[in-house]
Image 1 (cartoon, rainbow, N blue to C red):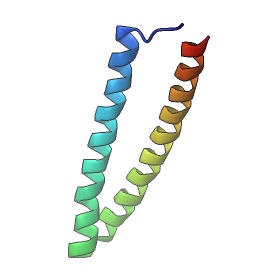
Image 2 (cartoon, rainbow, N blue to C red):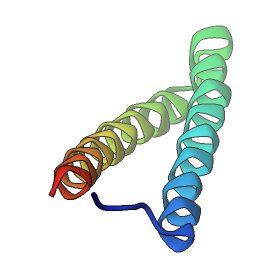
Image 3 (cartoon, rainbow, N blue to C red):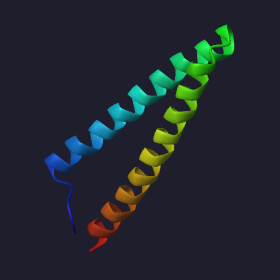
Length: 72
């Protein structure tokens, strides 16, 4: 049965921090867009959502691969 190494755990936890940072930045820009009508903040918010989407997809793939390795 495969194991997740300490280094892999650290890398994976860094992804969680990256998610948190992206969500926080999105929240700030989204509030600027919704409350102040700042169109540029709206554009930034959309870009950040795309980054979150891409990071989520990559993370899903990593989780699937890790599960497969654990079974092997």
